[in-house]
Image (cartoon, rainbow, N blue to C red; front, top):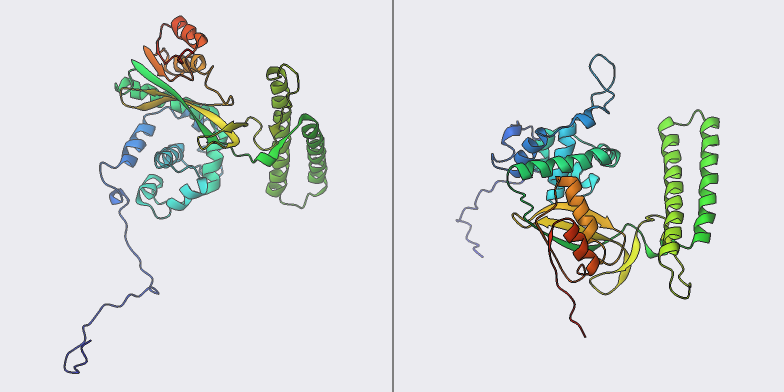
Length: 335
């Protein structure tokens, strides 16, 4: 350490974090010209968005708050999914600071409620959008359907193991849910001074719980019809929070409530052309439905389909032959 008083100390710029800074931002220059967000925006702009526009109540000549452009919401979700982001809160948070999200929304704040409500409120329209995207990719030669691959992977459901109940328990909970809905209806009529939005939210939550319980009862009855063993001792159970989820074995050897995600991929560019969340734990009977979904989504069957031994059985071979599709699988070794 130099202690010589004749040596001058260096002058350094101090960091001042208490200051307020006003900056001019040119939104177009937030991201590069070849940024993927620009391509997504152009792609969504070419899609038919009339189904979204038809549901917007705010129209010219009438009072009301302007609606967020569906092109913005669709583009935000597509870009978010491409980054592995599925949380509406996280998308809204990134719109505040991340350049690509800021560019897509034009620096206008987008709440997580708007994003979440748009995704959950337009399931049919978003499915139609997926078909349009596939059609555009096919028109550009990125999807050929000359050869596709089929594979399944387990994804954990939004249900804990302690939410699974037998039919008797579900019916008891269902009765309580119906009673709760009835009380909510009476409460809504009696408490006129309560905020309408709060009352509506509570009634909606009660109805959703009743709907999930009814679905759980139906799922238990279906399982009891289809999965009884020879001794008739099978006891079906379903989750009260995610009725369609079934307990499945995962890749780590454990068993958790899950879905069996079925992916059909075009081998030309590695693009996923169809996704389905199946409730059966095994892939034995998934090939025929996958071919049907390809025909429904893209208008034709693939020329070839490749799948592993879990899909290879006589029923799958017959289904592929009936569709005029060459099936490449692997038969299990005979004992």
